[in-house]
Amino acid sequence: MKTKMKTSEFVIVMVIAVAVALYTLMPFILVVLNVFKSATSIVADPIGMTGASIGQLMTNLTNVINNSNFSFWFAFGTSALITIVSLILLALFGGMAAWVICRNKTKWSTAIYMVFIASMIIPFQVVMLPMISTFRDVGNFVGLPMLQSIPGIVFAYCGFGGAMTVFILTGMVKTVPYDLEEAAAIDGCSYEGIYFRIVFPLLRPSVVTVTILNGMWIWNDYLLPSLMLGQNGKVKTLPVAVQAFVGSYVKQWDLILTAALLAMIPMIIIFLIAQKQIMSGMVEGAVK
Amino acid sequence: MESSGTGRKLLSLVLLIGGAALLVGSLALDFMGNRASYRGPMLVIGVACFLAGLYLFPTLTRHKDIINFLFLIPLLFTFAVTVIIPLCLGIFYSMTDWTGIQYTKFVGLGNYITMFKEVSFLWSLIITVLFVLFNMILVNLVGFALALLCTSRLKGVGFFRAAYFLPNLIGGIVLGYVWQFVFNNVLIQLSSNGVSLLSNTPTAFAAIIVVYIWQYAGYIMLIYVNGLVTVPGDVLEAAAIDGANAFTTLIRIKIPMIASTITICTFLTLTSAFKQFDVNMALTNGTGSVQDFMGQYLTNGTQMLALNIYNTAISKNSYALGQAKAVLFFIILACVSLIQVRVSNKKEVEM
Image 1 (cartoon, rainbow over the protein chains, first blue to last red):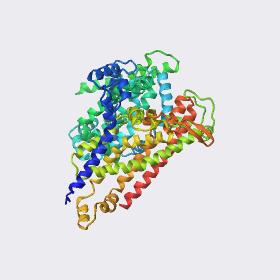
Image 2 (image 1 turned 60 degrees about the vertical axis):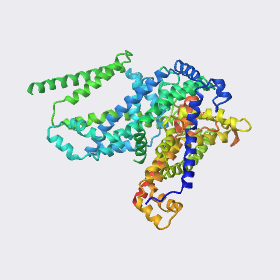
Image 3 (image 1 turned 135 degrees about the vertical axis):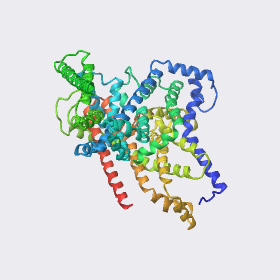
Image 4 (image 1 turned 90 degrees about the vertical axis):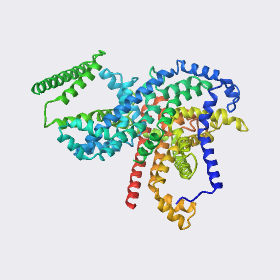
């Protein structure tokens, strides 16, 4: 079946592939190259290796990490905490809702499902302003800090990620054989036990998919945390910290590029570990 | 067994009553204008106790309904508070003189009229449409070409796929600044006149398109690869035996067979390009001068719709106007999505 490619064709295809790869990786290469330099040598020669040294990298790193405008570790921890807690809650609540919607075919469950699906077209821009004021008013009224607080952001992500999560997980619940659940019920498993012991473990592949999709979005999201936390608030996620940092150090490329590198590294490490899952998860999310 | 049953009954009752008491108590404090700091935690604990009491409620017939309710409520509640209520409020606020905190009067369609009289907004609308059109075509072409490259017999496919996909992992804000560096400090050295591409409105606009393709093509490529590998090998083999060359195979077999993938990718690029915000903000922040557009000098040459909404509300503090623009933004996206549903349904019937 496989027609053999001619050597000349193979060489041409390889050259194109390498050229495109160089182009896509070029900005990353430039960042890595320039974090080894001081601000003056970056401006003087951004492409070459002149003035690059390990010592300068250390200086840049300590300057950025210890910078009070950036506070890397704090921002990193905030981002990680928000992302992890939101992902766990979304998978848990999303699976629970998907199961109930799928196993109880009533008018209500269908209506709820339809609303979830329809809401997936709502862009964040149309709800962001009233959402902030609702959160502020409700928070003031009941005495809970909803803005400028990590639980508030997690709450918002559960609301926004819910529709997509339920949609993908409902597709998976449909594939779980109902006989299994009946057998468990006959053996004396409680109703909620059926979900946690039988159904949820079987949802794993789709839970991985939604976790990847939600994770990429939540980790990189800028607009929601910047509106909820404020540009100069105490709590900052990584993207908000980068934006605030760059705003205060215009043209200080040694610091900006080091900050950018620090912001990129966690995602790249995760990608190197779970490359296959991430790429197939992203495709599945789009195709569904 | 008997004692645990009564214990459970008692616990449920205590939790239900206690939870309800805390709940009502904290709400009563709220309504009386009490600003004590313990009313927030009181409310949360009250709700938690009430739900736990509900879970332990000693009934066999209604147990299933209670669990159904408990399983649905967390997501439904967060969803209602973050999406449904703000959406309804937002549509209402867009017809008032809302300041982000309060409104005093209903102005009907006043904000919508102001919006269409604002020349800079019309400019944003036009360049957003242009941006979307360019990207829809270019991202799909580049993504498809990369997918063909990645499904041809080349060495190290895994590496190339990962390399092309990598930009998609990083958030737009960080990428925007990295590219700002590339344009302002690196490419400027290669240009003859020493002017950055970002300082000129048309070239800055092109720069945003380039960055966007760079970021998004790898993702679209993955979806096309996923489609291309589903084209059955025996069909390709039959074509090869019949003497079809690579180009004919591509046009006559591969493209028709992945028509549904093309639909998905087209709408995916359309909606995501339309919502583009992060790169726009970090790369140019919407700046760029336009000498004469409808008789006015504009300074928001590269400001896309999403950024225009943000700036109207946050920077210029015109919340009601920004909200009206956002509602228009929503209507456009909703229309696009409806067309998408129509198109993909038709496709499925044909196949």
